[in-house]
Image (cartoon, rainbow, N blue to C red; front, side, top):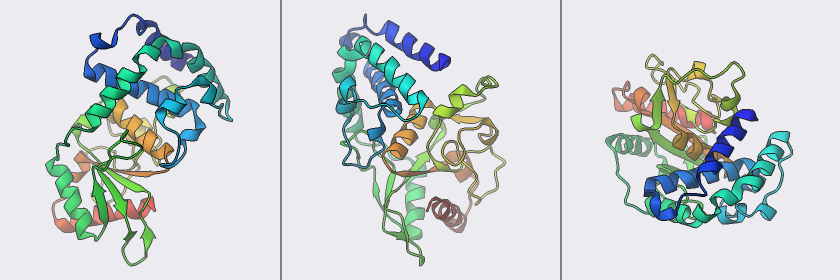
Length: 267
């Protein structure tokens, strides 16, 4: 708790003196991301599907309920104490975030390749479709079923994670691994360059728990971790396709086997 309290208090200490018009759009988006993460860890109603409450509702202290565990209670109390420090930034930060999410997406060759592979597998999907009132825009929202087995894919999203989603060789966490509990998200690849092609190795997050031994020197950036955690808290299963594993796949058959394996493991 000490590490998290220090981060939150440091975050809150600098914000009251900042005017919204003195912060870049990227900075306002970072503020909104931080409040999303805090709300997610203090508001159990976020573990809901599309009909759940919006972020504005979660920002009201009287609407925030205490988790059953002590950690949620601690964060709730701390967030209630500190929330006035950034209240003046709440609306500008959310506006900046939503504006960013309405920009036309830049489609990478990697995304196109994964989309073609899903089509070859006969998997239907929506591409870059906003969910949760536009808060997040997953790469692929799957629909229908997988193969002849009829496995339902309707609550699965596929995220294609290029190099900008990872950092390399971070500082080693303390032996207690306090921050590891904050990691969550995708199932799928996430290991090092030596991973076996076509094998659905544990990812960084749910299925891998963010453990350093499974990260192969790559750790997801905070924005990627938050994306995965939010999607999971809203009832989605996140399948990640990391660039460094995709680059090892040579033929269309290799790619179909790889993606098919990830989807089979997810359902």
